Structures are given as structure tokens and as C-alpha cells.
Length: 128
Image (cartoon, rainbow, N blue to C red; front, side, top):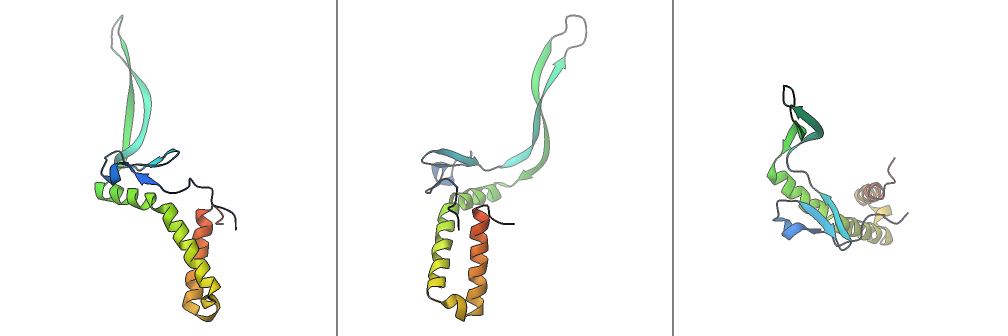
């Protein structure tokens, strides 16, 4: 099993998740910003006034593809900020179950541990 290559915990939300920027950071700096509100693509464009000696103006075009409700993005911020802790807790739980031999005795525990190990491998980028 390889070591995870994500930024070490703890991860924090900006202002305890109350900030509208939805940024998640760690000691080393920002990790990500969670999309919220309208989302889509933007690209540079130029407007030219008609006539001789017309002026040109550069601006950004935007095509909206959808919108993410505030309650979704607020919840996503909290979930993503907890990701390293969830990873570590899942790994510890899977190892405890394996070490206590519940893995081999109980079919439900076997499936749960197999699922947990597959999820942890996915978090390490090892899923197929």
C-alpha cells in the first residue's frame, strides 16, 4: 500500500465555512475553492465601436452551464475539509478490524473492510 500523496491534515475552511469564498486551505496554503453559484466557461473577447476611429474594448465573455445551490456548496466545503481526517479514520478502522480477525469471521465485516480498503486505494489514486 503506498502512502497517500495529498496535502497533510489538518485542512481548514475559510472562517469556519462561513466565508462566501468557499476556500479550503492547509498550513502550506490553499488547497481548493469549491464552486458555488453560477458555473461555466469564460474567455476573452473584444468589442469594437463602429465607424472610423472606433475604439476597441477587451472584456470577458461567460457562458453559464448551471448553478450550484448555496446549501450544496456549503456542505461540500465541510466534506472536502474533512477528507484527510476521514481517510485516516477509515484506514485506522480497517486495520483494527483486520487485526482483530473480524475480517475473516464475519461476512458483513469482510465486505465492509473490502469496501473500505477499495475506497482508501481510490483516495491514493490506485483505483482501476
